[in-house]
Image (cartoon, rainbow over all chains, first blue to last red; front, top):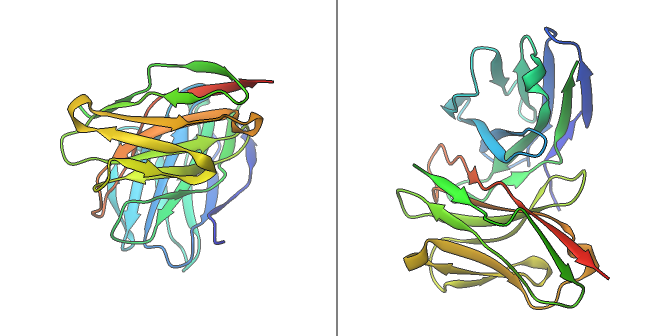
Length: 113
Length: 115
């Protein structure tokens, strides 16, 4: 069964460093999302991406964040200068088309020291 | 404001007992409702979803949920819990479609199962 994959599973970085989180959505899906979950808190929406552009972003998704679909398979989230409060589990999700049934990847745990 | 409330942070049930996890939502449009399960160290797995039709929906792993529009609720149930059901359960709401489609999640209910 096709699934969303994410790499790495765990990333440790120093404050101020740039990180890139990678996702491979399900191959025939058209809509892509990033969410994050700070430890012990709820899953929060960051950004949605469709037709090679951002379709919506939350207040969390400030200028430090960017997304890209550099080729036909990868979907990346870049944090330009990480802060301690960026430590969280980051989930990628994708959806095929008309209905909003989103499939989630296993997540990348980001630890900022 | 759009929101999802899961009033129970942690529930413990005995194996073989029935289970009900509560979810209430506030959403401006017709909601598309979901239950996801997250096992430790794992991602979010979709258990079931509801948009329209029969208000009692069946999902995977023997779970079902009932939509009650008058109560803005979408409670998850299972008649007999198995030890492998121990996990965290998230209720979510979003639009049916559209180019955006961000889901709003509740804070989750952690389920523990006693032998």
